[in-house]
Image (cartoon, rainbow, N blue to C red; front, side):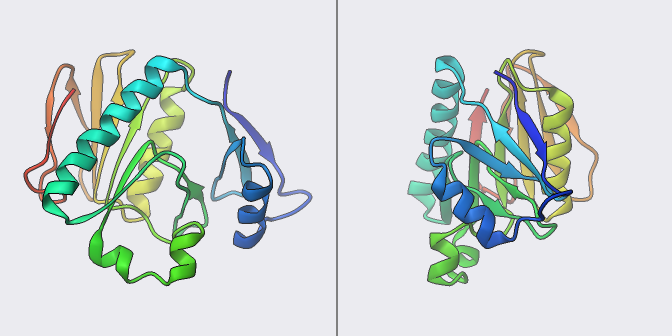
Length: 187
């Protein structure tokens, strides 16, 4: 199943609250909204992708449990980016101070911030160009470090603010750099 994008702009430009209500009314459907106001219906992942995604969350979660430096989020969490997009990375991490600065309502709904660190895992149905554009959107909205894991091409792309994308061949060991100090991910 492929991602479906619907252009709602000729009819309606969804507000943050309208998008939130749409997601709550359709909890069985994974939705995103890009900065242009297009509604993106994200297909579910298969068993292998879901297992790999869970392993990534566990890795970041274990590091975070030891360091207690932030909050880890699953792919079900939607973040409201400064450009107006509503996105849900496969794995996200936010520095604790930034999370605690949000109001209770902001924490309950879709947090209005860009994560500090994300991982996107390309599944067999994902178009690489679309994921690369999504990663660049995160960087343009303040993401500090992002990983795009591409098992199909046996590569991982590393995204950093103000730097060119670095591409490594798999297998690789990726550092959390200064964003997740001491974190290492074997891919």
